[in-house]
Amino acid sequence: MSMSKLARGWADLPRDLLESVLARLPVPDLVRFPAVCTAWQSVHAAAAARLRQATPSSPWLMLPFNPTARAGGVAKLSVARFLSLAEGRVYVIRQPAPAARDRLCVGSSADGWLVTADARSELSLLNPITGAQLRLPPAATLPFVDARRGADGRVESYGLRSCFADGGGCGEEALVPTETLGPDRLRYEVYEK
Image (cartoon, rainbow, N blue to C red; front, side):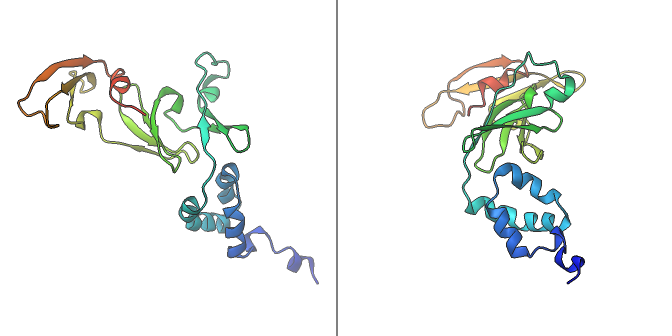
């Protein structure tokens, strides 16, 4: 038997075998799996959503950034650290720009997405494993937030309206005077985990 018949290559492994392997991989290896070859990338894309629903994984905790750790320059600032509870191991994962370290994490999903608020209190969804990012509607679309813009169109402050009326609706009911917040402060006053 020739050597070429024995060593067909990683790309030629049967699809069901690849799916079986994929279902047993920890998160770091799931991320690396599609990088092997286009055949593996295809299996990963087809099976990823199904696997997320079928296999519960142990949570990862995003560790706080060290604001004084600037020795590594930009490269050091564009990574996030995650603790795998199942493995007791810390993973360092490169993050897309704008860096996650400049944002406040205000929520998360079971699928691993983080809801982050930037320095202007604008929200984004961030998948720290894949690097995917999605902008959410502006903070000023919230019914109780008014954006006050400067001549250049940038938000200079937010007006936060509060209402303490019976029955849940405000209408012409008693309103507390509007509170003015800097663009960076709204994220601490409105968004809660």
